[in-house]
Image 1 (cartoon, rainbow, N blue to C red):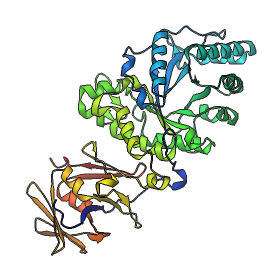
Image 2 (image 1 turned 90 degrees about the vertical axis):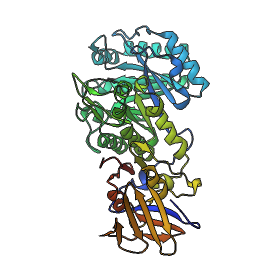
Image 3 (image 1 turned 90 degrees about the horizontal axis):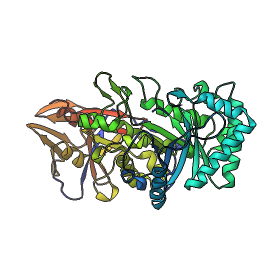
Image 4 (image 1 turned 180 degrees about the horizontal axis):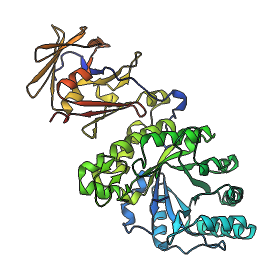
Length: 465
């Protein structure tokens, strides 16, 4: 890894027109129950000097401490900050969080580690020594498991990689410890890179779960959403159970290598973007909105998310860990069907949360593939007021000199008195009023995007300003 005015019981709700629901099928959706969805944080102890108490172990399920480096003879490089690891283990275990050690990585002292892994794994004697050293290390530090990060076995070394995996798994089983691996992503649901294709079924069956490195594809397309999706689907097609696939999400940019936290500090708006015009090199990365979408995709299609590296996270409202924790606190208890129907609404980079108990409705997709979203809360979020004339059955929305009137059961709306045809009707259903969102928001200069892969609606109320 390299890094409103409402009378009676009517609740006004918006119907988004022309937004089709491209949600994941139920067969790809996981029922999320407490403790099953993994939130993994890589912690590169030799790269950062952040106080351990800043690590949100209470919001993680796993910490993977990096890196434990092998020598060519099968021995291990002494850990640079042993007390730091001990401190993390104590804090994490207090919070019920597991700690693994990552063995390997891309390089050590600017030299690739692949040749070392190849040398060690090819020798029965050296392989045995490495496994013994790793198991002793796990016992000494009270760890819960090991992550093997060999980047990457090739056609000549895959047989030795499998031997290492099988023997290490057997040794860890004797200690009741787990084995995981960092594996590549894939740009196709059926065709992965050679490094992914080579991983054998025997190896995959040995891992408790896999951390999928769905990043570092190239600079401009460092870590797009589509790459995350194809990476998940590739490993599903390889037979890995969904709950054993953890989607890796980077907290750094390319080619600048700037950290997410530093980008957010430089300009708060960068925290919500996937690009920043930094100098001397530009920054392509994942901002909070994209990371939120990836988390939702992982909830629906996989078994967790992994952050590389948690030390690169921001604080406060732009914290990725806090965002993930907030999502889980609200939707991890949903049934498979409820999770499949869940829709996320983002207005001006802030999530607009809808809770069933509020009585204002929650977004959903109807039988005609129309996405419906509560009106009052949404319009007030963009500074508009909403009223309902029950006698004439007309909804009125006003903001900054613009007035939109929506007659119930009519195929038009009135914007400042001018009639505009619409391809649906405002209706009353189950005691709630539904009106066309796109037509209303367009009248107020808002932009709307629908991301079907994550069932996310993004609204920009500042578009016309």
